Length: 349
Image (cartoon, rainbow, N blue to C red; front, side, top):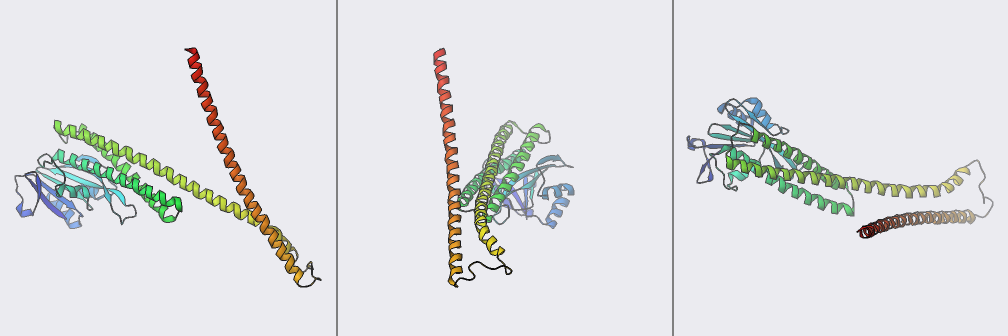
């Protein structure tokens, strides 16, 4: 979809192609592009095919490049799609400056560009194309921060559900959020390198006001990077903790099964030994004695099994108490050492 925008009284106005004023700056918004639209943009504005393909590549990193008669800037922005396997991800936006025309190209619908068309962003001057690019990066940083907070809230709610019971669906949701954080961190670092290059290159010229604005955008970008790294480390730790809990629960179940297996091994050995070629005990006694013997054996086995399980629980609780006491003792020793050091300092004074 190709739309044409020009600015009047600080507001963007959507126009048809035949309504465009030639002597005014023009913004061409290209989103959800088709093959015919990319071919039209390429032929109409003499854009290299390799640059169009780079913009449409989902894995393309942020960069600034000089083309033949135009300047290409690629910025990565966040996207939220609840239907996708990874709900939070990033896409590249291509920004092409050619004469009095600026073209933004994105292969999907983008909330950052949508905010510009709906006039939600203030103090935008279409006559200042470098400031327009920095405004896009600033809006991308704000969306990054907002999505990072949403990811943190969602991961916290999933963790609360996993405390009651760990299921595969919740683990897959956490893995999706973990991938989203990795995508965000990589894209933010790529945008940070782009900001550094924009300040040092001569392709885009900033005035003094724009330089201050670029510094503010750089600070917001650095803050988003730190938030993404922090949330990533927290989520990694949570995943490791829940994997340890799952392994511990499995070990407890296997331990109980091993105890039951050991208890049932003795009756199994007896019944296996007395096969068809051996005479059975109590064979000459009346018919109800073997039943009584089997019943007594089963009852004794059940009591032994329950005693072993309770003994195992008591031993585990005793070990926990011993560890707790050892920690308390270590803490008391540390406090005593601190107290002695304070007394030594007072005496030395």
